[in-house]
Image 1 (tube, helix red, strand yellow):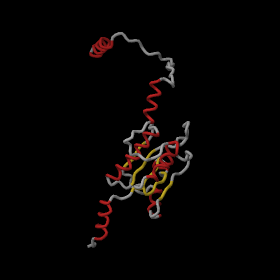
Image 2 (tube, rainbow, N blue to C red):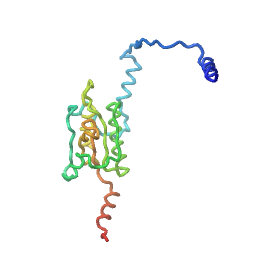
Image 3 (cartoon, rainbow, N blue to C red):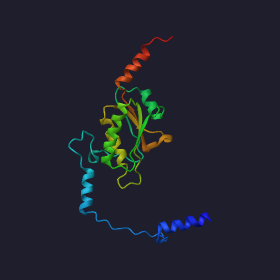
Image 4 (cartoon, rainbow, N blue to C red):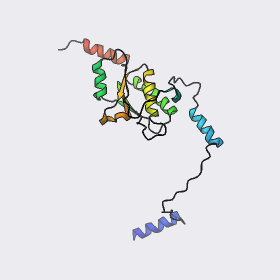
Length: 195
């Protein structure tokens, strides 16, 4: 009884509707790639404002890596044992950034903001998921950009492609510089006599 009342109420609310075509055919509207609207949207996506302090290069200057290449970088002064632990995924990843579905311009802004945010919050180890880009028209584009951008950031001490169980070649682990606050805390911890 209640079921019939609900059906009647539903029909009154919805009104005259026709079921969708179940044949699986979907009409695609032709897109004019040179329409003024699309051209202006494309230009706006690429345009970087004058107030932008992002010094990372755009995709046109980026040396390319292959989708299955391992990313690896270590600044002078980073101990081999520390770098080995990073490569093995033995540091706790405290923050992560996913670049999937972002453009190069958006990724460039996100990577710089992410690293700055990590430093501001005393994060020592982070990860960036960029994907391998194997099936893309422009293979490994974001991966190449991340590989090129990270060494330009002084706060990035080292990075390496993640171990297989943590994202593998589609993600990169980053070791960040300790903040002055953390350095001071470590000095105090190691200088205090143990009881």
